[in-house]
Figure 1 (cartoon, rainbow, N blue to C red):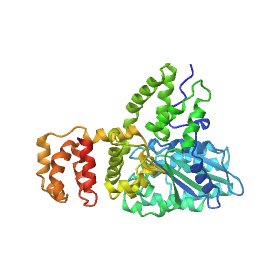
Figure 2 (figure 1 turned 90 degrees about the vertical axis):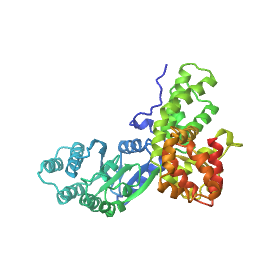
Figure 3 (figure 1 turned 180 degrees about the horizontal axis):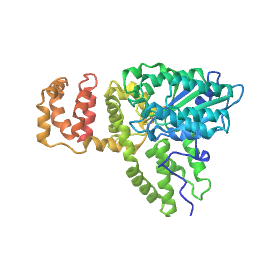
Figure 4 (figure 1 turned 120 degrees about the vertical axis):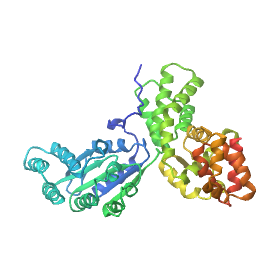
Length: 435
């Protein structure tokens, strides 16, 4: 019996198991290989594969620039830095890794001397990078979970100005990974105003292309006697989309079902049950990270995709979605970029039927007591919000919609229903799905 080839707990570290991302890798490598030796910022959802991409980049034998100078690729995971960490601790870690990559000699001695220095400023670091430049050495610094640095108040504007200066004046390139664009993660306006963020090109990491999903299955199953049927791959696409993390989960449980000798229908039931239990925490995290506008668009898609509401397969056009929520258009592109929504020729859908089910259940979970609801209704601020709902529907909203929703979504839904252009369609959608 072969070991299950699918894994989803840790990032991919073996280059032979790294699948796809050719376009994103080329964007990063092209910037490293140009004359300016430029930096990139990888942005993507939790579990989308950012760490795996950095690992694959680290494993490459990089030849850079016209002189094909040697590149020292250093990897630093700021998750290892505590909230009390300082720039000095950051640079100590970088210099330690740099020292390990260098052969014995004057450069290694210079790095170690700088590590031991009582004081360390940008001029000291610049002097060291002058020596590295003269030796024909480039440094690529891979910084995973960079929000741990950008959001740390111990790393003030001086740190980011200094890091930018080093990257501009020396052969130092930064490849960061974060769940959002760097400037939005900064802990203060002073840091957000820093020109540091201007040195990066953003590389958005979303779901796989369909071809990459197929490549994942082909490569991972190649050394086993299991082959997923076409219908099973379509089933995995319905619950996992082309999201690499969810494909690994779904593929792993389907492989287990084969190993247990389950018949066709039982294999799918087994896979879906276990996939749902394993994937819901990460799906919930994606929901919590969404803005109110994104949550409303996701809710519209989830309610429209309810089994009793579907007369045909396929997606929903932007025009149809804006009938229910006028701001759906701007949020759909962002949701598709995140990999939470899939954009196809026939419209938009949630990437996973399991996510759609989770949203529908989440909206109705832990319904509040009548007393709690009455207290909320009597709050002057909430009365003011409800007064903005179309008068002919306000009573029905209070009696037939809000009491059936989880308390934490009352304000969100009322805000949605204050738009006179979409309130009727939105109300009917909510009423039909809430019963």
